[in-house]
Image 1 (cartoon, one colour):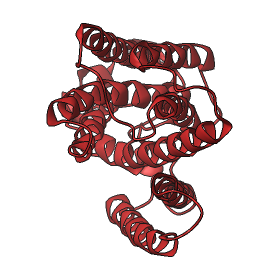
Image 2 (cartoon, rainbow, N blue to C red; image 1 turned 180 degrees about the horizontal axis):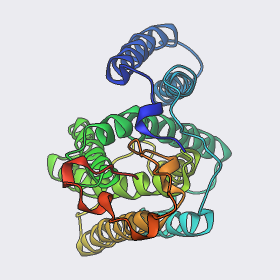
Image 3 (tube, one colour; image 1 turned 180 degrees about the vertical axis):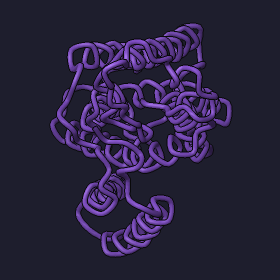
Amino acid sequence: MTDLSALPKHLELKSLAVLGISLLSLILFAFLFRHGPLDENARVALVQLIVGLMMVGLSVSWLRLPLFDRPAHLVPAMSAAGVIIALNCLDLGRFPGWSWWRLGDALLLGLAAGVMEEILCRGPLLFILAKHAPSAVSSSWFAAVVSAVIFGLLHLLNAGGSQSLWQTVLQVLYTMAFGLAMAALYLITHNLLVPILAHTIFDTIAYYFDLNGTSSMGGSWWGWLSFAALTGGCLVIGLALMGTLPHSALISRAIGAPTTQIVAGPNATDAPNEASEAPLHAKKRNL
């Protein structure tokens, strides 16, 4: 079992150090790759991918976070991911024609987003949020919901350029729902590769149709319908998957609170259940 007591001491400070190292590396690689045969979008994606992989390596080797446990519940998880990806295909626009070069660019952009965004919002942040969750709520729910909100708000950075502020607001809303679904995928499978794969496919398809990653939702009645379907679908899937957590015996392997084992004595069956009578703030919150 992996619980919060097994996490490294000073997790918050070490996570900030990982973030600082990653930011410095981002600046360094951006400077080194400022020129080259790749276009600007591809260079930025390559830098993001390299830094994202660095964050993954540091999170596993230094922070020792259980990001890649043996996958569990793969069938419902991959089925849910497939539905989300299908919903994303409702409003992609006109097919630009087949091109291996375009597919390569889209795959690089999608993989960079999948790795960087998942480790950023479903990596150390998820564990820190779970560790500091209020005692009255489930730490898994608190971490998943708050990380999803943060993930959505990060997309405010997309405002400007070819994407209007209104389209960015819509993007923030559906990415919050998408973030909840991705957090749920990690929590039920205990393996970050599952949401990374789902996120990568999701973004690769979108980038193939528009290499600038511009959101077109809300621009027409079909765009509004697609927005509602994607947002609602991600929200329902995320909530449904999260709803399975209390019934999963394996979820404590992801993020949990220290538990106390009571050794039963000869008269244990006659003894009162002291754990159930403990005050709420004293109970341990397993994920």
